[in-house]
Image (cartoon, rainbow, N blue to C red):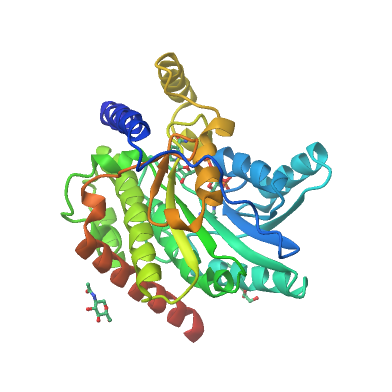
Length: 351
Ligand SMILES: NC(=O)c1ccc[n+]([C@@H]2O[C@H](COP(=O)([O-])OP(=O)(O)OC[C@H]3O[C@@H](n4cnc5c(N)ncnc54)[C@H](OP(=O)(O)O)[C@@H]3O)[C@@H](O)[C@H]2O)c1
Ligand SMILES: *[C@@H]1O[C@H](CO)[C@@H](O)[C@H](O)[C@H]1NC(C)=O
Ligand SMILES: *[C@@H]1O[C@H](CO)[C@@H](O)[C@H](O)[C@H]1NC(C)=O
């Protein structure tokens, strides 16, 4: 896992080097400014209580966004709000609870966002959604709804959230933007064999009941969750740009690189400390303030970059894995996720 991931990031830095040489992928030097025609542009950032999400909140709030911090722990979010309000006088930030592994929580969150926007009587519009939350589990766990928890948090929950928020994003007066946080680790997925079984509740529960779950499987599930995120973004972009989803919304991937955050919290502290020391001495480890640059660039870039993969800051974009551009698999993934979303919403209604 470790060696493959380091190989993957090195490969991406090489790609970045060549992308910087070519003119077609030239960095965007003047990102689009925040829309000033509406009194306040609003944005949502998931996983805002720590790491890359928290750093992104600080930058976007200072750029004039009304930032909705979304996360599963109100205590964690409130602490960040308090800290930021103390440090910056004129920012507007608000914490709202959402657990991405719960459809009910996602539906409630959407309603809360809607109510919040309503209190501003049209003077505030939702222009940006940053799907950032993510976990790196060290064991396989099942969510109350029966999904694998890593896939559910990193991918499926964000698919549900995006579908749920699209009507609100559509109302934005400027083309709204969806930024999905991906990762170079998606390069390690070599083929599509068995990937859909990770999304099926029956298959997940069957696997959990057998004791044969190798540990490397977890790294593979993480890589898959990120590949799903990348392919979801591209499919969303295709649907939006061809009119299948007739909306003025654009979608991009942002890859922060390797960042020192709490994402390794499930690993023993001595182990993650060692990893960080090794990565830092190889100049591969970044702070969240640096790591969030790809996300911020992706959020502020003009609509013409829709469907691209941001990596390396300065508005740079690179190509993702060959597999990730497979349109058939992406369409199938969308269809399956769509079915799971509709089923979950139906189940909620019949409760
Ligand atoms: N760090 C890296 O090197 C790296 C590299 C590439 C990509 N990424 C990606 O960057 C994103 C942010 O990660 P990070 O490194 O900043 O990690 P982090 O510091 O652990 O932050 C993850 C955030 O996600 C939230 N979260 C976890 N499960 C959730 C759930 N079920 N519902 C709602 N929120 C949930 C966490 O909230 P709690 O505080 O409540 O747990 C936390 O705020 C992830 O998608 C990760 O895969 C990270
Ligand atoms: C969502 O709201 C409903 C109705 O207010 C409530 O019964 C339910 O427990 C909420 N779900 C979650 C996950 O908080
Ligand atoms: C996806 O579902 C739609 C409607 O259910 C269907 O028309 C389409 O053929 C499906 N696409 C794929 C790739 O399975």
